[in-house]
Structures are given as C-alpha cells and as structure tokens.
Length: 434
Image 1: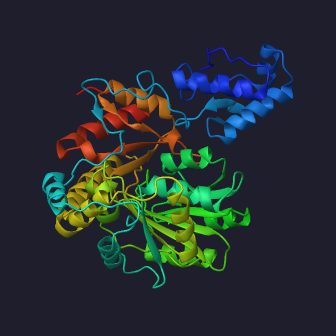
Image 2: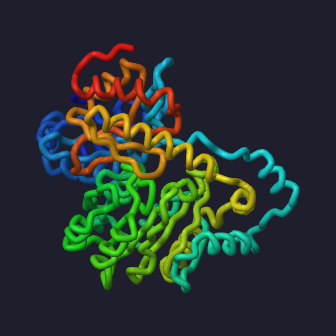
Image 3: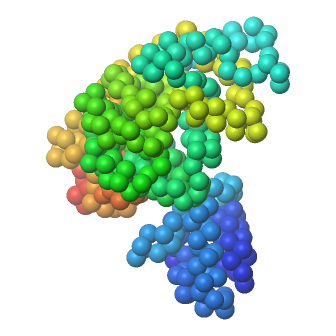
C-alpha cells in the first residue's frame, strides 16, 4: 500500500533524513511504497534530480529498494535502529511460529559456562586474539581446508560478511548471491551499497549455469552456502562442487563459503576452499549451540584473513576469549548428533507430507523447508488464519519465483500432517478446518 507518511525536505540530504526519521520512528514500515520521483518532486516543489538523488542515496545505504514497475519501497531490514515496539511481525497467541528461523534443540550451556568461569582466565589488550586451543581444534574439525589456510575468529557469520564487504569490496561492486538466499546477507549486501547479481539455486546448491552468468557480469565476490542453505535447505554435493570449481578456476573473484548449519548438517562437506586465489570459509556456532553464542571461525587465504583481522583491530579489537573458551568446551563435550537426527526426521517428514499432497518442497539439510507457491500473500494469510505463521519468500528472493519458508525447529511429528493439510488448503484457496 502507498505510504501515508509525509516526506519533507528541500535538498537531497534533507529528504534522506526525513525518510530515515520515518523508518526510525516506525511511521515507515518494511514494504511501504514511497512516491515516484516525479510525484515526490512535485509534492516538495524541488527538482526531479533532487528527489532522484535522495532515492539513490537511500538505495546505496540499503534503506529502500527499487522494484521496477512496483516502485520504490522500504527494505525488509533497513540498517536503521527502529522502534521495535511499532514494527516487526507479531505472531498472535495460539499460532504456531514456523517463521522465526531459529534452532530449538540446543545443549545446556550451564555446565559449560561454569567450567569456563572456573578457569579464571581473562584476556587483556596486549594478549587478546585467537586462542591457540581454539585454532587447533578448528583445524581438526576442518581437515579439508588448504594447508596454507589462515584462521581467525569473528562475531558470527554476519560479522564475518560485514568485515569482508568493508575490506575487500567497494560500493557499487557486483556480488553474486544465491536466489533465493539468506535474507540477512541480502540486507547486508544492500547496506554496503553493493550490486546484487542473483544466482539460481537448486537442491545441490548454486547452479553452474547461474554462476557462469554471474561471472560473465564481472562479479567481484560470490557467496555460496555449502550446507543447510537458508531458505531452501540445499547442500553442495561433491559433483556440484566439481562443476562450480570449473567455473571458478583462475577467476579473480572472492569466494565466500558459509557452512550455515555446521555440525547439524548430516551430509558430507564438499568445500570449494582454495579454488580461487582469494577465498573464505565461515562456520558459525549459532545453529548447533545457540543464537546467543555470537562467534564463528573464519578461515581463508592469508592475505584476506590479514585484512579482516586488521579491520577488526580498528573496531571491536577481538572476539571475547570467554566466548572462545565456551566454544572450545562445547566442541569437547556437546554432542549435536541427536539434534541433527531429530531435525532431519522432522524436515524429511514435512517434505514427504507436502509431496504426498502434490506440492513440491525443498529441504535436504538444516532447519528450513522452502515451498514454491503462486501467491505468497494468500498462502501466508490463510495459514495464519489456520494457526500457522510462516516466513514470506519475498524476504529471500531477488528474481526467483514466489515461495514460503517453513522452519521445522518448533514442529513436532504430530504437527506435520495437520500443517500439510492446512498448507494444501491455503495453496489451493480452500478453507481448512480441523
């Protein structure tokens, strides 16, 4: 719907501030449609070039996006701290939340934190950095990386991407992203003013043809989710890795691999590390051990890792050694295999139930299932009325067809058949009743 917020300003900078104020206060929400350049210029009595320059700055900052004939809208996650009491999706009471995208089967951190606290060791400015024991354990858990790989620690996968974008790329650089892909990384690409080049994804990861087309467009970096791709659950197979390696060989492009689910992925890791001269492999602790554990291992070629570490020294300095010791202890004591098997069972059962009703569903690994639909809004609304909240595919798409994402973390086996029935009714436009 068209926005009711009154944008003001006589210069491009003033118009930008007005739109940002609207987003910050919640008067402008995700998806709100802004006036056309000509309409805004006429409304404010300014030149069309002034309004166009303001929209360009807002796009470069990742606050708005232009969708061709659909106009200019506020992005789903603009990089502005907004009033959370007035924004964000609300899941009503009695509705099963299958949209959040967070894991639910997590180890008990109490004994781990007690063990770390009992060590009584804290770092200082002089000695802080990557703990030797963490680096040693990480290399043991990542044996397929090149022998000359350098290693550091960052504050989660998105922190690693943020550091890579700021050190290795410049605003306007084209970046190959999976489509559909991780909504948070798409928002971060936009916030850095980078240009998105979509790469289609199937169950085996990015398609070779899509990667080839992106490389022909001169992308400076490519993001590949190795396993448990969000939102489709795709996983790069050994054969697909060989095909992608052929396309990437001798290319001057930064290859960024995100092993999204880490220890929760039951399929073998087929990494592309070292195929290009500049490469990075990210493994976060959030999915297997909990979203509050903001830490990830970042391995890569020595020059790229050195840039990341140099940039981090100018800001946070280092990742807390308390977090690092916690992760080491979890690696030593926590068994995530039971959680991985349970997620696999729930996901496979949901995919099978949907396919039995004639609907294609994707989800080889991880905690998400992607279901193509004809009309996202109709399906979302009908499912909510039936007691289920799922994530709109529009948050994850660039040019790919519509779909919805279902997170199976909160699903029990008893929920699967009723949800599949509700989805079948929603997708076909029928009313569903228990």
